[in-house]
Image (cartoon, rainbow, N blue to C red; front, side, top):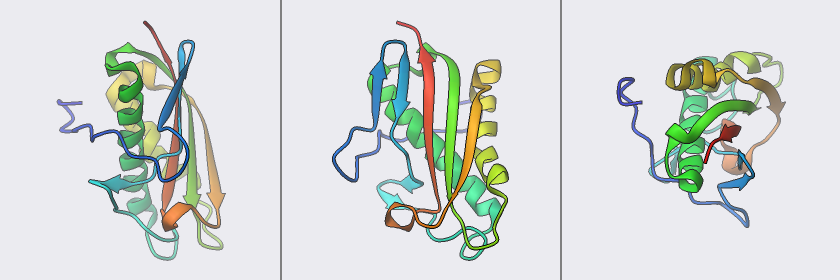
Length: 147
């Protein structure tokens, strides 16, 4: 991550009654992470209306860094990640906006840059008419880890 000029943020605080990530055996599941930076929502509104696809792509990257921070909070060291298994990206979409896969590429491409082949994953990119606190994007990760 250092070579990419990326800094992992502190693990995000939940907005409600849940935890940011849970380990079940050798899998870690994150809660949906929104594009907050230092506790502030950085990307807000509907993609295709309030934000461009390119801005939403960047939002997905921020969400992914937050998800990795949540995972690190559970396992202590991201070097324990063996494989990114699944990415789910929810996009707060304006009517007629259908480029959710391009937005989700923000998460997918970042994971590939960080983890190489271990960053290849299954994925869903879903359009939503609303997301919590009007976030533009929300990303969940499932990763396989070693002890």
